[in-house]
Image 1 (cartoon, rainbow, N blue to C red):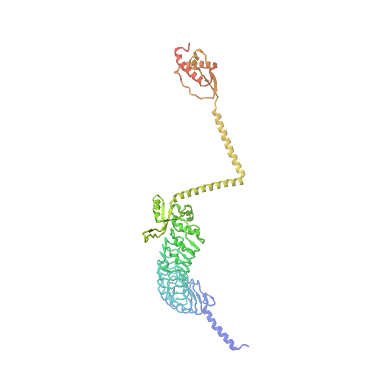
Image 2: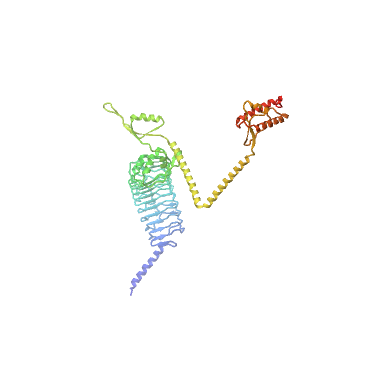
Length: 568
């Protein structure tokens, strides 16, 4: 049998527990043990009687301000989420009695300023998110006393500067995000005291210079993001070594110059991003300091493909890590758009070999320069001095002789490229014909028959034209009298001549021998008589001599006819 006292004791404990549960989990909120989630309920105030709650999320509500003492009844809280509200006012004592809070999220609100002692009641705070607000400035002692703070988010605000030593007490900070603000410059001691900081974000600001001296004594820094700024130069005015720095992102800036010794202060650098800047060349000393790199990006710069990129081209050829597939030339115009390594190889920009000469041979080099060549003097330190015996000793230095035949080599390169393109096009056409012949033999046969019929028709047309041009043959007399009897053929009716059939001729008939009118008929009679004598002649050959005799006879006839000799 159960004792009555035990029953009464159990009932008392139950009755005391019921109001506690009702107080911990307000209406419409979701409760998980001592964790409360009052999200997206359009609440304008924080629920009361939550003294035992260890976690509270008030995301996506309509809170507009945090008054002093408003959260004092939440002394057991370890995390508090107030993001995505409309908070624009935070009073100085708003977080009093919240000593156990380790994570505070105030992001995505409308906060424009925070009083100096806002976070002083939160000595155990480790994560603070103030991103996506409207902060224009930070009070110098805003983060004073936050010795356990490890992560601070300040991105997407309107900050224009970072006060000196504002993070002095944040000795445990490992992550700091100041990206997407309006920072134009940094003070040398802005990040003083951040000995454990490993990741720093300064991207998407308005910084005009990258000076590694702004990050002194950040001995644990591993990653530095400074992309999408307006920096034009990268310098280091501090003798300090960042032994653990492994990644630097300087892409999408306007960098034109990098001091040769900058990267010597980061011997463990693994990843370097310099793409989308205005670099034209890199110093050999910079390349030598990149011996530890595993990945680099250099695309999108204004590379000048001349002898100035020889050092970079040589380094890229020997680099075995991850890099851009192509670096395009920006100048000169003849090489614009070409791949850097291809241009160096095609134009033979870096094939001159250095010659070791003495200062005594400088005259010959300058003479060659005057004749059209070029002399490039490498780095040297002349050290002439006069010995004790009056002997003058000259030091040797390196002279590189180069002939600028860039234009001619580029023309040759274009010719070779064009020739290869033509050959490639011809091979493509041949391949297409072969494929057509293999795949469509019937069509090829029809095409050949069409060509053959056209050729036959053309030949028939030509033969018809030749036959039409041939007319009926005509006869003409080939008369060849000798020198004596030429004029007596008509009178005495003797002499010899031959007749021969020749190809037909078309001749224009004109009046001859002075006949006109009635005289023409008499002339025709004379020709008939002459033809009769020639047809009966048999002793003259058919060569040109008979033609000469005929001509003499006709001349004689022209003169004899009027005097009556012909009638005789």
